[in-house]
Amino acid sequence: MTLSTQFLTMLSMIGMGSLFGVMFDTYQRFLDRPNRKSWIVFFNDLLFWVIQALIIFYILFLVNNGELRFYIFVALLCGFAAYQSLFKGVYLRLLEFMIKTAIAIYRFIRRAFQLLIYKPVVGLIQLVISIIILIGRGLFSLVKFVLKVLLFILKIVWVPIVKIILILWKLLPKSIKKYVEKLYNRTAGFFMEIKNYLLKLIKKFKKPKK
Image: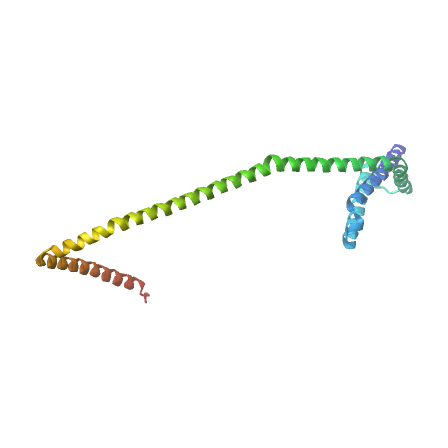
């Protein structure tokens, strides 16, 4: 390994140590460890350490083809210590600011969506439904009223018509009455034959085929 490669490896591992500190504090901030179940914390911790190890090894592979040296671990420790002493406070304040900004933006977008889209659409749908219900009730009331008027008119008109027909029927000669009765009986018999024929056809089609 050449001197330039060793120097680049040292710088890379110092940077990775600092980046590890950043990732660790970010992970701790979002994990909310006290309010998580122990098995979730264990799984997340294991996953975090595996990912960090893979990232460090990948960077090391790019720099010096993955050769491990003692000074690599020293460089990682130095980078982590430098972050803890110099940048941790600044980064944590920046992280909190970014989280609060993201939450504020999310709340603003959600509030704007509710005010500009959700509530107007829901209100419009409710208005349309109310209008439809109102129109339906009005039409139903109108139909009921019309039926009542028609029934009232029929009662007024039908009773005199029936009485007039009965009076005329009594005044008709017996020969005409008999002819009308025969015509009625023939018509009724004709319709009865049609009814019986249709019933036979229906029974024939309903019989199960062998």
